[in-house]
Image (cartoon, rainbow, N blue to C red; front, side):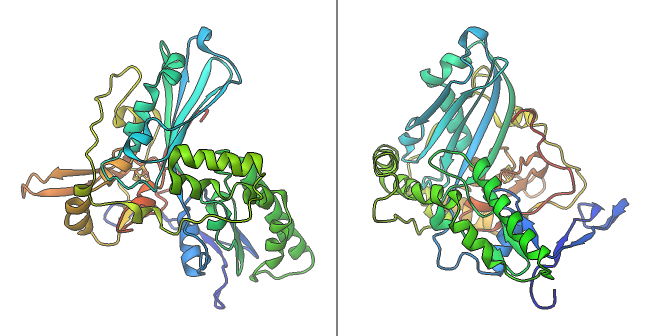
Length: 406
Ligand code: SF4
């Protein structure tokens, strides 16, 4: 609106070619106007990122912190299946490279298990590859015992916001609200975010309903949401586990977990202090020359796999002739800055093999190639690029991964 409040959203144009021209299938986007617009795009939503920056919603807060979760679904032999069994892990393999995170394996129904590894994106060694760490995770005897003789069914990856309440931006702004993982309401200690995201949505719906039914024309900042949020069990739950993330970052997997256990399970989150991590994840990377190279084993095709066969299982599909949805602010940064200093970490942190340094056939020089059609929309590049040079925007409607049972 002219007064600077949010008026609604505009859907993307369809049928635009890679070079920006209108194709025969061109259809302009539509504007959808509302009294209040609720943004719930999940972690690192691209509209959420813009709203946070435009309205300075993160002023005075800790930066948000993230992890990249890489996940697979397997069919396993019935004799190895224990429906309902939950396995959580910490330490190996990430501790070997000095990074933090943790693994999970859940026994679902129908002889299926879902397993994954979350690598904290605060890691500092640019040689680290979250994808390869996940492959190593499956080789652990604790995990392998369930997978042997099984078959991988699906693959996926997604960043998650886990900074805790210290990193929550202001969730209200004129004309709208930021809710769920778009703001960062996940309980990082439990690796659970569905119930908290839903609760933030319920509180938002209740406050919008009250405002609209009492005659509000919208466009204002719903301060009543902040009060209701603070009075809810959601805030209490997030406050109780607030030290988990910063403790892991400060003290590492073992001592961090010991501290978090004492803080959350013994003192019930009532220790009279709050830990902080004021360094954004992208700023944690050290130059490659200062870090030990990490050599990852080749995939065996049984337990461990490469990126491309994994992306195949995510059913990722994008219209090929469309503008690239991974935008570089400065096209020179990957080769001129990121490659010499960090050995261009995008080649490793992207779990879908989207970013490659290849030799240009014509010039014989290095070229930064973006295979955007492989993108599984995890948002890691938008978060971890050391120059903050990559912006993920929504591709043409319906493009992206299509996860069954994930
Ligand atoms: S290009 Fe970015 S958003 Fe897409 S899969 Fe790779 S890291 Fe994730």
